Length: 78
Picture (tube, rainbow, N blue to C red):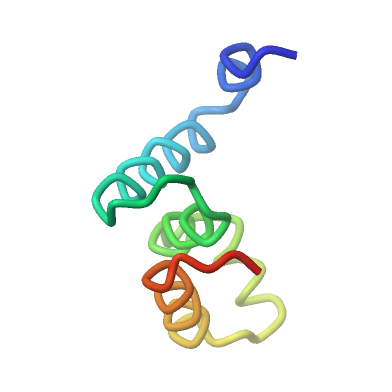
């Protein structure tokens, strides 16, 4: 399946997260979009699914944010 077609099938929120992750990748001078980039942009959206999951499982949002930012800065992939 073509990448353009896949992107075209994303819902509005997913497209928005992907666009922001791309912008963050470019800003940091990265050459690839990391899953951490996507998770981070979702984390800063209070209404995102990831925030609901963190709340449901009593996971501290600030800890998650620190971990993601650290990984993004180092450009590491798990």
